[in-house]
Length: 499
Ligand code: BES
Ligand code: MN
Ligand code: ZN
Image 1 (cartoon, rainbow, N blue to C red):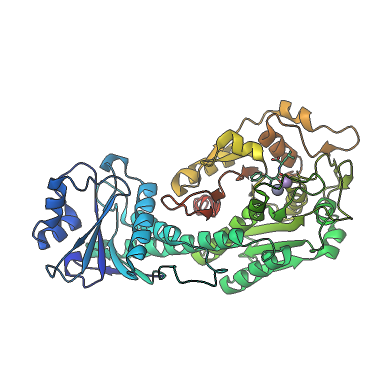
Image 2 (spheres, rainbow, N blue to C red):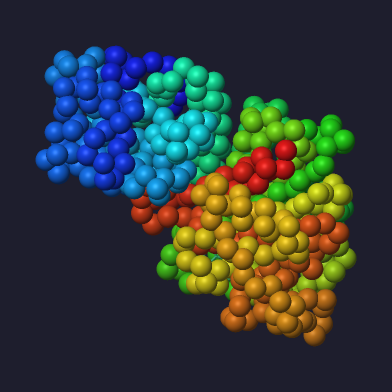
């Protein structure tokens, strides 16, 4: 979908459809919406007076202009109460509009910069939110559908119309940022929606390579021999149950800028999690194709960082393998030696994410990073604790955790801290090795985080358990049923604040 920006009077725009916005409460449209109403001879006021439109968040109504203005249709969208306006309200409104416009069969439309105004969002923020929300709301995963008869045609173009010429540059900047971030989230969604037989560890690495080449990122993919040479016994241990070779993908933005501080993002890349020998129940197991959502978000974030040209060194690390119960699979009771040298007793082969991350966190040390953040669909316990709204946040550095919480509020990718007391680590002490890979049912998300902490040595580190937030069971606002791409916006907002 193309995104354009122009300045001018919305009531003079020739278009199939124009979008105007209203807050809940006032009966008199103001600003650019008021100008359109005046040109329509009060049609919007009439609708408001009749009580047919309240301006509630995500409410929409389509008017036909019958020649009063050059545009054929006007879509009114509600933004809710003015005092509750924020980026997320705008994203959701834009997302709902995009799907309604598509359902009408309209392919190109013009919109006001929803929510921009003197006592609202800045023009840049608002334009960013509109474009991001539009791309996320219009997202569909259709690449495996052969029968396309009942698919509404794709949206082709959105044009943002800034009434104020002074704001034009800010709107352009915001629209471009929103496009970059929105496309990066959709890229991550595509990877996570793709089934395990398409998105194998090798295919994931190839997708990373193709993306890196198109965005000017440095990319390297380690094979199993290189992993063995590095001593990545935990990643290779998990990979033993599968015929598909494991991959370890390294992406770098500004790789040659050793003068810049390095930030490392690590993403869990289990392309299918059957549980291995500790096999999962078959009911719902198909969902475990998305157990590489941390990897997908890492790749999406790197894509956006490159496109935005952030003046930071940013490294993405993606350890990837299937977790299957093949005849040579690792087993409960096995002890694995990690790249760090520390040994792990395997209690459950279904606690595989922390094993592959242990090697990736040890690998991260070579960058002497300013900070490392890992994104992982690590535990069902985190889903129990926080549901599908917020991801679990843990780590060894309070300042980093505070930065991530602030980035979560701005980006809409919500996170919430879990208690991270040392006492919980009692649960993962092993009789035979340095640590064991499960701590039983109590506080399962926390013991998962504490396990990782043992391998995140020598740098500020945070762990984001995204098990509950990477998949949506329904379409609502800018979340579309299926993979959400959670984590891309969180990481991008966090890194933008480091500049
Ligand atoms: N990938 C799963 C976690 C998961 C569960 C993600 C549900 C999304 C939805 C992870 O590998 C796993 O199996 N974790 C185990 C850990 C346990 C054995 C300590 C779990 O949560 O049961
Ligand atoms: Mn598992
Ligand atoms: Zn898993």
